[in-house]
Length: 95
Image (tube, rainbow, N blue to C red; front, side, top):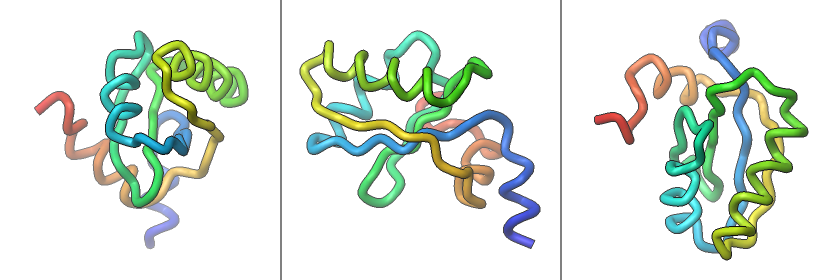
């Protein structure tokens, strides 16, 4: 079942809303704690290497992007089956 697959996701996912998604994508891939960043419809899905509280990570991501001159909001979201698939196949930035 899709919900069971999504439940196997390791870590937390944050949805990043930014007007310039491509610049935000490139910037987030340089963030010291980034595990993966990929496009997901109108947002980016970001996964952190740490198991920090999601509210703290969201604030850090917004501050990091603001420092790069990118206006964005971040919020924790439930991982989807697509997130789990990408995680199991390997992050696109590592290819």
